Image (cartoon, rainbow, N blue to C red):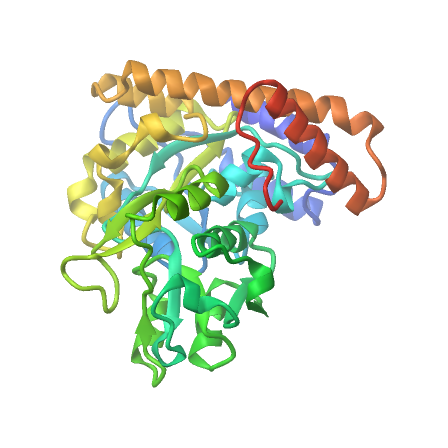
Length: 403
């Protein structure tokens, strides 16, 4: 409970985080309702918890609903899944205390880093903490094309119409990284701006665009497959080491992957990249008991929900990839992983390195802000330079290219 009070103090001291003070206070009190013992003494939940997620119809939203059904049936807890239209909205509700956790994607990394839409004065680097990761038989993000656009290789995307999701830097930066596989950039394609993730697929279905990015098994892509245009996944051959390096230099948490789950994907699979999606995260102030309880029930009830939503099988314990994580884990999650013998010395070393990275970023932000430019554009440009300098001086990867 002490961590909640700390969060409340932080919220009150930050005017303008959310409009509608009374409404927000009610939401906060709802989140900080008393905990009730559940099926086991060491598992405790309030009567209602909340997660933010991608929009309805996406794999992440569907998986959250499936896990919520377990909580309701076995623990008497209602899980409210709050769909977020973009990266900022999903994490804004987390930071403001309107949800306990966020089941999103790479935006958690960008928020940790204070880059893209999180480079602004009201954001900066955030103390993100991981709970659990999903590495499914599908993929977290790849290119999906209309078959009639005749795109067979990544190089064929040059000059084509590619969706750009407003307010979703993680999606757009992922697309930029995939374009770099063929030495392409946003300057080499026709950018088609859309209002959200679902709208991206609709733009291709309606022949406003030719290429969209998303998870291999994302439900909106079924509409494209069923449309007259058809659906094709161009592959990213893993034998091109230079191309692989270009992508991973931009997104080091993306790894080469064989996807076997998704529309039109053959049984032998296709060569793509993937990362954790959904990535369930909280903040350093998230309640340790709730984190521990959430991770424990997700692991112990895996067999019950794994087939109840596309991609849910990726929550398996043997796919957690602790040693490849790019953000630190929450102490409540680590406590459970240690109990079941999954937290290794290598995992702890990676965790400590990620904590150190966040410390470097926070110090750089604290030093930068007092004398920062007032102009929005100048502020962001100056911060990105200060951030890159601090990381470089500490001998850490900067992720500076293309930001």
